[in-house]
Length: 322
Ligand SMILES: [Zn+2]
Image (cartoon, rainbow, N blue to C red; front, side, top):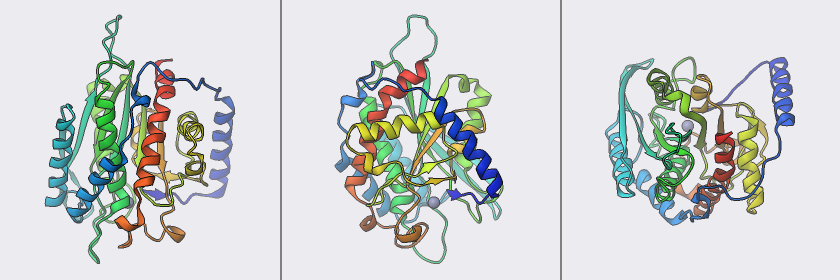
């Protein structure tokens, strides 16, 4: 992902727009939703193991053998918790070649509805590819490893509630978020753009109420930015949940305009939020650097983000059902 450099006048206008949106947001109830997901524990030790397994594969850029191994790992782990993973393979031209990409996703169905209509769908996503870097071995623990690990553990927790809740979930593991060369034009977000288009083509998009993106959530000093692209109401739901469960220190970070996979979904009209800490090490110097290692991540941070997401889901469900 990239912070966007824009003209200050544009920024001022956008800030005013978002401030207005935030003022319009009404306060929601804070109780538990019909789905019991929030009462199930997030197991940070499992998430940490998922992170270690990814790092052990070495660099995992799109189109590489290690990326393929990771896709197989994701599918095995999803099957192990009773879900049915789908591989969404496609080829796309990058500035330097044509690359084979592949998203992996699995759905957690909602309880059958009396009206026979499909339940609303909420997509929880994380990219799993790592940036192609030639100068050093980029194992990228935080930038893709951490959020992928957390999403896998969330899959286990959510799978246990399948067929019971009012909202269906899609766990979407996204390939090709990283720019192959430079974050310009279409050289980024290959997998999320592909998935968003596929939703449009199939007509399934009408069911999708929200996209919740996790990225760079393993920093041992975890503080989520207030991304100004994100939907203000969705951001309030998760930041509010964090404060309610005593994890408020990890949210309400500086306002920053962050370009990431959520923009692919926003471009097709899906309200989206990016839960991201884009300040990794002093001056973000560990980002896309050899210092993006397990040592600079922590199990406590994976635990915090996992618990924040689960705590926010009951309110998100009520919001999605409106
Ligand atoms: Zn990155």
